[in-house]
Image 1 (spheres, chains in turn yellow, cyan):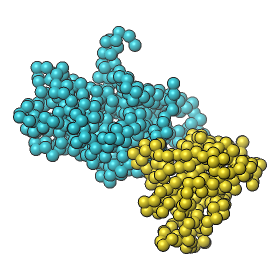
Image 2 (cartoon, chains in turn orange, yellow; image 1 turned 90 degrees about the vertical axis):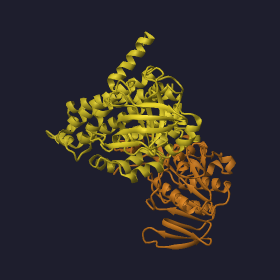
Image 3 (tube, chains in turn red, cyan; image 1 turned 90 degrees about the horizontal axis):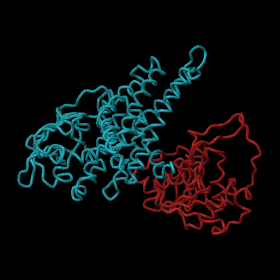
Image 4 (cartoon, rainbow over the protein chains, first blue to last red; image 1 turned 60 degrees about the vertical axis):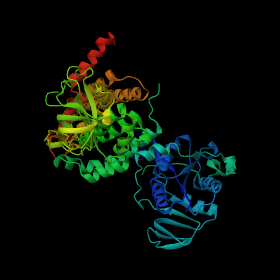
Length: 225
Length: 384
């Protein structure tokens, strides 16, 4: 099984806080992997059966600090799209960039995403990415097993079980499993694992469909209730 | 100048902090009450690779250097001083003597199992008549064919209850004393004639096993001599130079935890109609705690960086040990004061930190010995 896992860099909520006067999230400290994406990675590690697990991320140079822990946990290598024109996109634009990066990295049996992020929590990147890659998908997966070219999934809420053909995309529900802490040796080795940063040009994505320019939605105002 | 930790060290800190939160803090009081570390917790620490942090990968270690090791011990210092002692007695003195001065063969034979934690290490220098005066050893080692025959006893040995591998210091030439008369040996617990006394009952660090060791005609192969015959005192001093840094790091971790606990308590406890933290008396204590912790933290990592870049740190490590241990005693005293009654109660962690703190001014060389080391270096150099 060759598995792609998409990871979003998010503020460490243990040290970030919401400023009521400015109605915004004030970040302190570093960026971390989105928790549900860690669940997706853990599911990939449980399913890989000796196969390769490759992580994908869109973010600035500083996002590396949220990607290295994913390599420490067990991903074999990673793609981080740091191209300035790919930044500040929404789910639509990010899904296009991720799809291009995944295609460039070869064929995958499974693509896993966290079901939603702790930032906006819209849960759209996974489904949009499935559309962009032309894959069948199952959302809010809590458990998965693979037999004979198919993946059987349990899903959160009232969605119930499903069986879909591989290759497929799953979005993994937060808390679906317990991500294993990497050991100290894996931590040290993570810094030496391959990490590529392809440009948008290399990915064949035009600048008007990525980043802020490619976003379908505009955030006008946030307010603290 | 650059004070940033490497990506690896940041990740090591993050991993260790999560481990301490999840696996250590919930058990810290039980470890103290039962005077023992649960074997299943030691197993989990093995799985995480905590027993070989500073040693190179080719010897089975993690390769995180002294800085990485200080980061790990700082985070353990937030959770349980008993576990700090387990790790430090094993790594920074027990295994470090072997790593610094052992022959390649001896290192290859023992360090991989020590780094994986399969074998626990300890450092056996102190004796009944040789504490601060470490050169006044009475344990003897007499050559006999391919072996040395060890006789004597060692006192207050951390990890003495469970260790498999010991760096033992014995007299090989009484006339030469510290200058050429003391030799370091690697002794294993399965050597005939080796035995352990009962675990000591202690004020703090109660989970860490401290006991007496006995050597009765213990036959140690000459291949197990650590470094050169007669150079054991130098090995001991070099090893302790390094160990003192991680002791300082653990003190910094404990101090940060106490500050966090104190801020939390002072923010929630209402007296005279407002949280305690609004009172200047409390604010000043917190400010002093933070200032002292920052000072100790700064010197711990500067000294660790010096060590990792190959600089000599005898004076600096003595300063770190002296300052960090005395800092923690003052910080923990203020933490108890801020907490008031609940700080004195055994169902709250501050009381345990208070008892655990005190040993840091005594072991790995008393603070009086640290002052001697610092003053001797000043006198030798004739300047700062």
